[in-house]
Length: 242
Image (cartoon, rainbow, N blue to C red):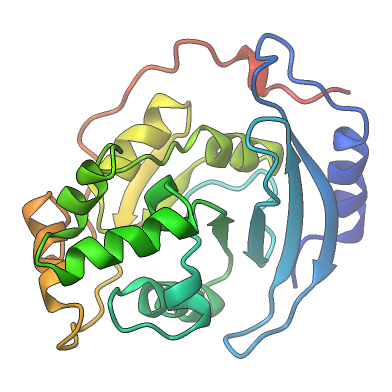
């Protein structure tokens, strides 16, 4: 069972003419919700509109997450080469599939699929970064040589998406502590971490070692408590219109 029909209608109704008061620069709306059974289990897909990057982000929902606490959430950034084309240069597809497999076995959970290709630098620049990696640079140095930060992603939109779905608190499925801090700074209550550990292959071993040096928790298979919570400085713009 996913979101009940009355909840679906409520979410769509709230978003129909929704504007975020106090935050005119970013506004998120739920545009459509449909069933999406897949090879991992029973899911629903939610299509989002936003006025910030105007990309069509998505949420894959398993079970009823409406106004629930401690909802397992995988925050996944789009990776065309990995997710779709089966590239072995990264662990993106493996993490996505493992997360969907785990959530399908739980009572409820969400995969937020964010259209932030190449850590936010886009597909063309991602392939340019691959060229530099072929010359021996690691993934972070390659981004810097192209004039970008190590990671250009921002999770403000993801936080808005969770709030628009009326999720109370989450357990984040991640190996990246930076995602935890970023979501907390954007007003999301995180009650725990669920590791997503996948074995390396001969092509992504150096990539994973680079992520590990950057602080990713790739050797920790046990859940980890969130020790530091960040104050939500301005939470009033999360409120949905009646």
